[in-house]
Picture (cartoon, rainbow, N blue to C red):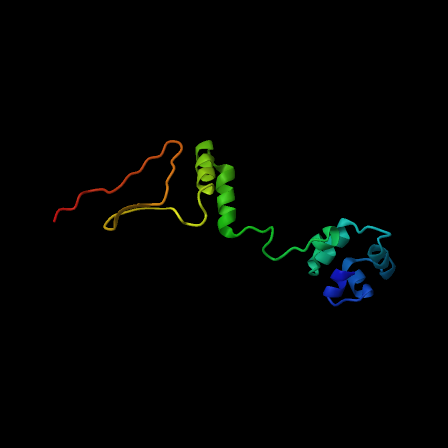
Length: 133
């Protein structure tokens, strides 16, 4: 009933969008009957928050959906070698605050700020050809 009210529909209108009659809608709202998957799909297509109807928890537009970057990372994880998965897992356990920084770059120089812990093999390749002045 709350979701129907949120959508600004009366029982007859909401029932029609779900492909059922008003009496069936009333029985759903009283808890005397449970809706089937086709009804839930139909009202979801109309904008109803089916997660809320079933669980009492609201979904949001972004909750439960991955961004393109997250989806790409997950795809690489799933198709990756054990070495790649290990690397991604190690990176994922690093500090999220950006408090520790490692910067190694051409003309800028080298910089290591904060505590750094390296567990496992790691290779750094720094620089290239030396510049002559």
